[in-house]
Image (cartoon, rainbow, N blue to C red; front, side, top):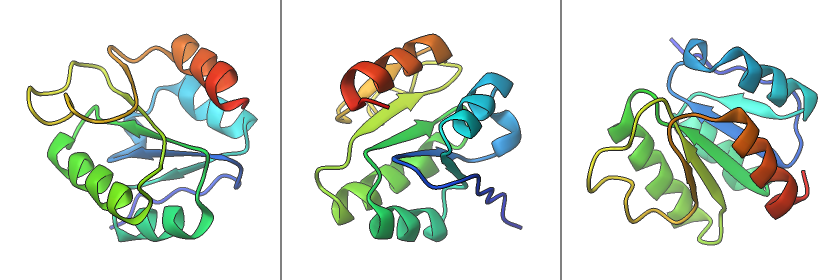
Length: 122
């Protein structure tokens, strides 16, 4: 069963294991920015490979190991991909410590919006 939820294409993609875990304001932000929210599966990787968004937000609130594999798959396909890593708790030691990208823990929509505006002009 897929939780794939497409809003509208723009320059930002949000990847979450279970979209119901996304905070309401992040989903609202995605709608405002006409973004796309994807479940971390092969469809997400293929979509990112095809559309090459400016930034990928990985919500690692659950299924951290799976999302780490998604991160590696994306970096393998698009080495210069840019990431914002967020969630409700600190990532496990070793998994996301060496990941390139902005890390925001705990989840903070205001900080995400600030980074998107300042770093990615979104």
